[in-house]
Length: 185
Image (cartoon, rainbow, N blue to C red; front, side, top):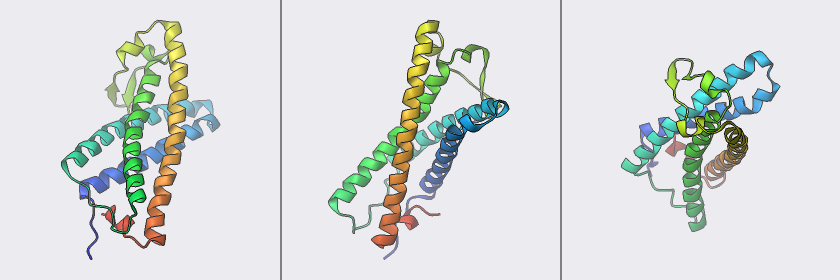
């Protein structure tokens, strides 16, 4: 029986977003170990990758709405099918929530108005005006809250990614389903 695969576009978007998310998680987790000269460039790169993930995630969602994914292998139990649906929906939600919460957090940064943001040092990117223009004390409190939310989402996303990987490998190796082939070029 032939393996039912995702479209080439879906596969490229999947692996590109996955790689960018992993790089961004590594950047975020490494920033506290860096010397001061590296902190700002790493944070700026983290922001640029986050906004890129947001754009690619929106493209993934639009692509998925227009191109039905292949059915899950027949060997999936009903609870595994439902768990896969919930996991994918949750991952899509996090692909949006993470960059949006980061963008909001950055917009509430006290120095945002005097430090323009440029994606990868080139493309100007606006902060969110309704946050940027808040009263300073409220903005600082909001910045702290958003930082906590963004970090919590990041750790949760890391856990979800690990579960996603373990689930895919379980289906591939233990259940002998062609799981990885479905998402390969």
